Amino acid sequence: MFMCRVNGFAKSKRVSSGPLFVSKRVRACLHEGEDGNTIVEMALMLPVLMTVMLGIFVLGIIFNNYTSLTQAVGSSAEYLQSLNTEPAGTDVCALTWTFMKGVAPTLTPSNLNVTITLNGVVTTGNGTTPPSCSTGTNNMANGVTVTVAATYPCNFVIYGKNYAPGGCLLSQSSSQLIY
Image (cartoon, rainbow, N blue to C red; front, side):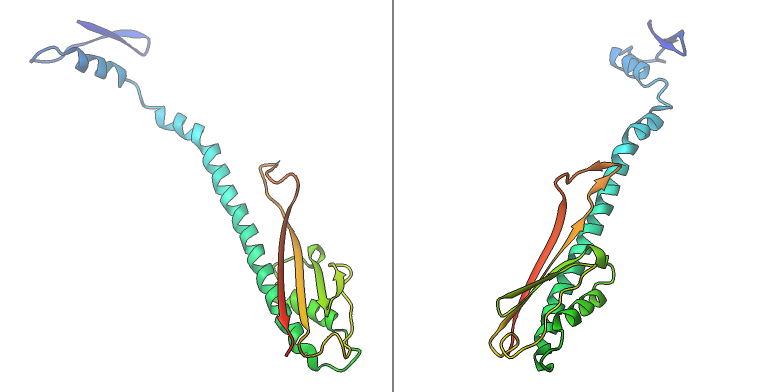
């Protein structure tokens, strides 16, 4: 006869007619009282599952911001290229900045840093101070390359732990030739 403990009491296991295999008795004893295993497994795995799901969510936001930044920079460079017909003295950088904010409404303008290059002349601006430059005969002539570059910070914090301690910075650049 084989004995195992169930709820603190010894309980005998009898196998009805047939040979008394030890493996059947051991298996029956080991599977006794597994009612709470599912709850314990769920309690152990839930924090890991939630961390992975929140990480996927945060990475999705970062990817969405990067896609918005890419579209805003590319569209703004094309828009700046189309401004070559503006009269001399027009602030094309401010117009491009306003256009960029309209193309990427999901990005916070105060966090956006923009660099506009017209014929080798670099103009920078950020959310509080937009770039300023004016059209002239040299900087918006045919054959001149205009470049729009932008950077935007990203936040990679999950449950208070920063997974990018040096900082996460999204950057994009686009150039167009005026013709």
